[in-house]
Image (tube, rainbow, N blue to C red):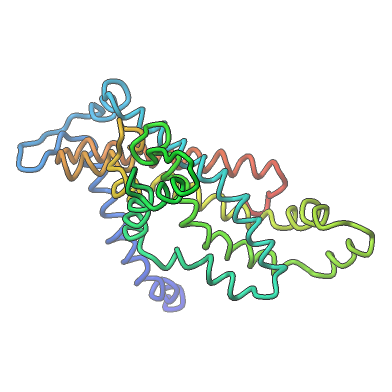
Length: 289
């Protein structure tokens, strides 16, 4: 009996942490999602009303879902190839530690500080980016004030910020590959492109799976960059679901509706992650996905 309880005794701190900081808030949020809870006002059970309102009558919610998908997929499409290229180039460099440190530096900076920094750099007529373009006699667009450019600008900042962590993970994956495989390919006459696309890339697929999955989840739930850089504007073009949920909860104080939005976002992330793992499993990653 004592031996059977020993594993649970060692696990108890982690289980207690998960119960207090994950399961309890999850249960409270799920309860609130079925009420019309507002701060400082009477509330009662409303069933699925919050969910149906968000999906059928809310004028902005579906737009935020679209923005969320565009942001997550767009950042993933840019970040993965760029991170892979940087990791592969650095792995062949003589100064690996130096370049890895340089590319990782943005990860050491607080996301709010990064957002304020890029807001200053991209700010219309007074921003440094447009000032440099003006010196080259090129027109500087309204990076954050143009509804067609604002979300793309935030995506580029997000890719710049996550490049370091992706590069480190992919570099670790590349370092773990057997160098003799590459040597044999070189002896057989394969060039650098063939070695990368036909040997390194297939062997790196488990690491790529992990990086793609975590990047997608972070992209779908991220909102601090939009909150600081654009506050969701202009014209709701950068309002993602997580930011809309934050505004409903802490600006409008509609905690019940915000909780319902949180669960819809959770289901969206879960569904997309499952589809992604399913597709990758078909690609030959049965042991990982």
